Length: 424
Ligand SMILES: Cc1ncc(COP(=O)(O)O)c(C=O)c1O
Picture 1 (cartoon, rainbow, N blue to C red):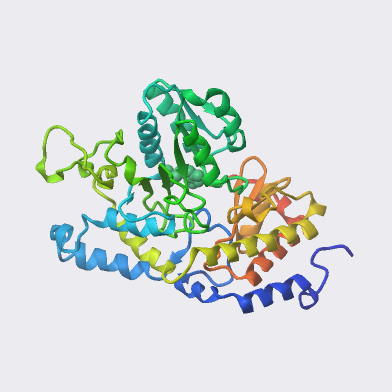
Picture 2: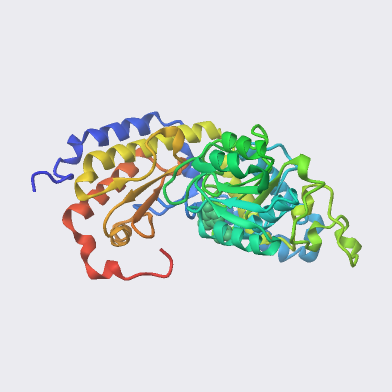
């Protein structure tokens, strides 16, 4: 096949040469040493589950062996286990443009979304609508519907680009707007400042889901006057499978927000053991029940991978990586029916590139078998993530070449690649 995308010898490949030059100039290249990554694997799914930071195992071992094993329950005080959700919250705050005292860590994003949406709607009694994005992650939509049923609100789905027009007509009825900053499927990045301003100008409270933004691009919650935000820590923050989520409540709302899950950890006097709930005045009221200490210890250690790293540096490299992939796809994959669905304008994309193609599931499985890990999002997307902390331009190039190879040789058509696993 003369037009095979891999016909040229690697040494003659100008995009490989460019990738090597980019690696040679990369000021973040040393960060890869902070992670355990299997040799030979090109890991393009850190937007789903970040890899293992090297600092995690010793920290978790210490918590298990010494703190739990030896110091037992005294660790709640001796090792300040009690303060960990708040300490982690302050660390996370630094990565999402928030001053300390406005974030706590705990539970899952789904739980925190429920908390945030109910709290946001309760801040605007008398208004009858909750807006959400019909393309956002299922939890975001399912929970919006549940909150609607619970509070007797009408839930309206719209794309963020439709917000201003919608509020122009119905703004006085809208209690809250809940959007994801980055679309989990397409990778489109929305304008947090503009959308927050638009929602607030109509008197609504804005809730942001930062799952696909936190730790990989600049988020400036305080600067944009954000109200509430939530996010997970197992993607770009590398906290590990099922690591706890976080919630941000702007300081100005903290003494008024009425969170629905009134667990004892959020009470003003948790050890007063009173029979009725009086919430803590501070962000502590967003705590619920006993924190998952093992996961939190892992996350605390994982976040040290960010030590000394500027989010702007991460963003610059992330954009260069996604640009490299988009160019590769345009030049060498379009002939196989591959379409880039992620926005081409750098300011409009997060840190992933989603490629629409026939048989995306099968292609994804064939890629994994050849050591290039991405994921599939129904119905037809191969979703590839490009966390800048540990990926090199050269290995990304290798991953893309492998994709071109699989598309060219048709090996993804082997029936075993069509067998659906539980998790895609
Ligand atoms: C944008 C978004 N929101 C919410 C969730 C749900 O998170 P969790 O499973 O931690 O509740 C996810 C999970 O991937 C997500 O991508």
